[in-house]
Image 1 (spheres, one colour):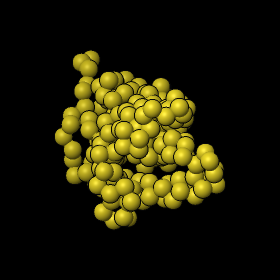
Image 2 (tube, one colour):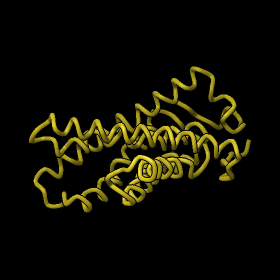
Image 3 (cartoon, rainbow, N blue to C red):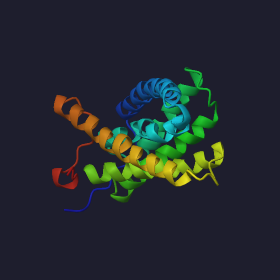
Image 4 (cartoon, helix red, strand yellow):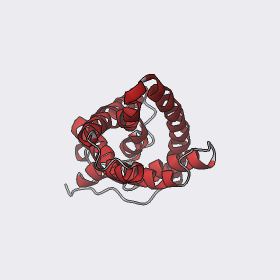
Length: 200
């Protein structure tokens, strides 16, 4: 059987799903910002590392959108939309720069799925998605927040990659598996041959 490459064309149903995910996770991302602020206060002198510890929370929507719709670019679009919701409707203190962050996170998170031509959705791909998303946005954050040259830069990177792998990767997969268990995804995914979508 010839290999199936998912089409990039989005249906109206796909667009609705992306919008719903973007709005829901835009709100959740704002909630995570509040948790970040509170935790940074509780951690005292180590509070500056809180963002690295929690970065995976802001990587969730891209792999979830990709696993649901299994089409190119939906991860990037979903992350951008979530960032836009934070900026436009929830007054994120980061302002428009958050759109750049969302774009970078979306690109990084989508790369591992793209490398499989959007046909593999197992734990390894989700793990790689979290690592790539966290790793790529780390360099943007390092420049933006002046981390370069800090003695704790390697510690920041380590914490960020761990957070990306666990929260942005494996937690995202757990959410998708939970949704699969409810049966709600059955009518949202494109119809392709079963042997062309390897989940494990």
